[in-house]
Figure 1 (cartoon, helix red, strand yellow):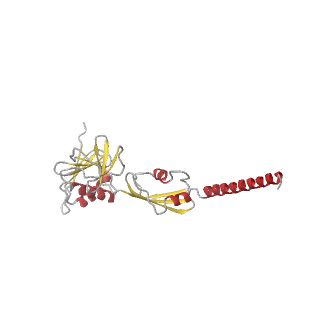
Figure 2 (tube, helix red, strand yellow):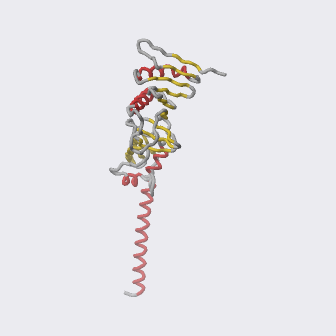
Figure 3 (cartoon, one colour):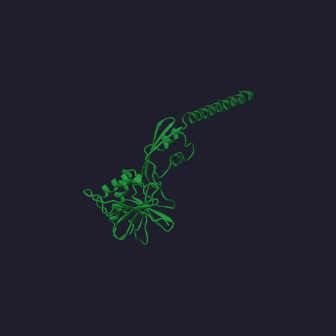
Length: 247
């Protein structure tokens, strides 16, 4: 074989492999373009917005591609995210992702120095944050001098955390959102709604008291004062509202 034939053979091989590379790159580009995520569905999220969840799921190279997402989260949930127990990612079609968020069940939070300690129904501190989460009440009046992550807050009566969970669940059931839940030394509760204070007293007849509060929420709008539900009874309701004295 002459030198010219050898050069031509090498040239053919180079052209061939360049063509193969171009075809592979074109196919890769076609897959990226045809499988780009355009619909991102999220459910179960309260602490994080849909945009924040999307950034978590789509992190990394080609994170907005459904094929990459499918390979990345195949039989694997997302964990180790603050306030989240787990997140399940499902590819619905080549343009749609569906994420189910399972948030940690938190009863409320307390402020300690410049941090917010979120706790569950057993009083166990499950998160430590520098910002408050909308939708969860701040709890005041609890006395403790330290905290340890993933251990119960050292309060005098640990049973108070179940009471907190009960009242927050009932408020949620009746679409009522309180700013703060205060406990006095007798473990009597007061709810705060702007300039309105609702004295619930103890945990007896709690469901009935919340129902009565729901019925009066329209009346309490733009009011400033105290609603006394401490002595509420189903057979003889005793409800009083005392407006604050204006100077």
